[in-house]
Amino acid sequence: MRPDDPYSPEVRLRFANPVNALPLKGAYPVALSAAASMPGEICEIQFSAGIEHGRIAEIGFRALACPHVIAAADFLCSELRGLAVSAFATVWTNKLMAALSIPEEKTGRIFLLEDALTSLGEQYAAEHEMG
Amino acid sequence: MSADAIYLDYAAATPPAPEVQEFMQALLMSTGGTANAAATHLAGRQAARSIEIARGQLAELLHTTPGRLVFTSGATESDNLAIQGAAHARAHRGRHLVTMQTEHKAVSDTFRALEKAGFEVSWLPPDANGRLDERQLTAALRADTQLVSVMHVNNETGAIQDLAAIGAICRDRDVLFHTDAAQSVGKMDIDLSAVPVDLLSLTAHKFYGPQGIGALYIADRPGCQILPLMHGGGQERRLRPGTLPVHLVAGLGAAASLARQKMDDDHAHVSSLRARLWEGIRRVEGVRETLPESVCYPGILNVSVAGVEGESLLLALEPLCVASGSACNSQSGEPSHVLRALGLDDISIQSAIRFSFGRGTTAEHIEEAVRRYMQAVARLRDIAGDARAA
Image 1: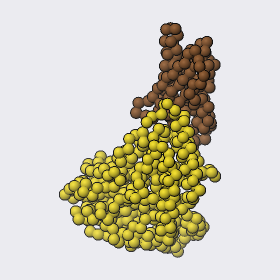
Image 2: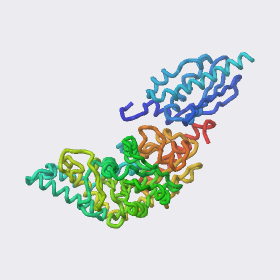
Image 3: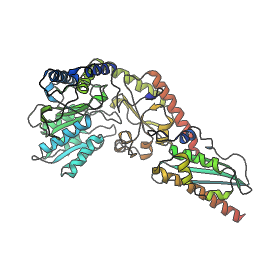
Image 4: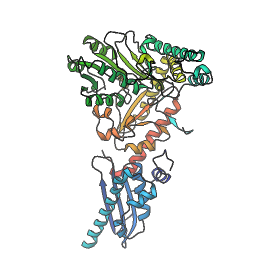
């Protein structure tokens, strides 16, 4: 990252082409959706995931947010696809901050992504128990 | 600047005109251009002469006499010198001051510092067109009011204030009138022989001169006195001590001279560019022009748009170089106090973009700006999908 550029190359790349900024396509045995927003700020994030055999078969996001959050959501979707549902409960913030060189002042916004994923995990657990 | 950057931020800084650059370069190569103007030897006298020529050029632009102009480092220093200097010089007469909520930070922060020092400040709101309601001004003036400060052209919206009307009200009450004219000097005709302004701040880098040099006009009339902020030499009538940067002062003078010649053409040029840009981007759903051209200096177009996050919009617009809704506050990330005073909600403010144009802006730049703005808004709305706020 250039010292005069607030965005790392990874953030710029994912912001320019967020391949995972998509609605959920296809039918899955379990379809989940969760959103999170930051009060008083323009930062809203929504994840949709399709679950098959306890794994994240598909995941996409929507975001009305800053470039760091958009890039981080896109990165997360790429990382999560194919993992077990338990990955929703993983602590992602440190990995995201490091992988995308996100400035510290954006930490609160990155936590928001974790909040939304935690909700997905809780939803799955609730549906799984019910089912 | 990157080769493919499209510069649409002339309200922040104009590039020095080629004529100004050449003139300054030649001066820097000469002994007289680099000597201390306070020295009495030949080189010093040459430097002093360059400074007085520049003072004369600026005086011609403003329709005043050279002796009324004090060189400073820019408009921020001029604002501080005018406001603090006048407030302290007249403190024995009263400690009430008046300004607007939509002033540049250089003015509003100076007033806040004076509030902490025991002065009382009335902060007047703008009307729906960003202008000062003269009845409100009249009502705000008191027996102990000593100074009114209202900027000429707003740096974020382009709103123009009626200096003649405000000045007349102030003269009638024997109150000093200061205006920050950083956005209008060299772009609009300001006739200080006719308009009742007591103190006027300006900076060269807003009218194709160099950065780091500005001036303060001080009217020649009883009661119009200010105290210096700094001490240490006899330069600039002891109001602004310190060795003057000869090449910067001369560059300011050259830019002033050029501005006189080009003012009408420049105005017509930016007016046509603004109309073209607004005509293009008004097709975007939910876009809003903050103020109409009829009440603005046409070199500035401020727009906001629903359903888009401001920082992402700014990045998506690259390589357009534009200012965000926080404009001069962009480093703080705080929503613009100017747009807030105009009644815009925080969602609109954070998506606000200020486009500003100048001599180097072409019709092709505007076409590209329209294309990129439409594309950026559509793309960000697509990413937002259902998450999109109204």
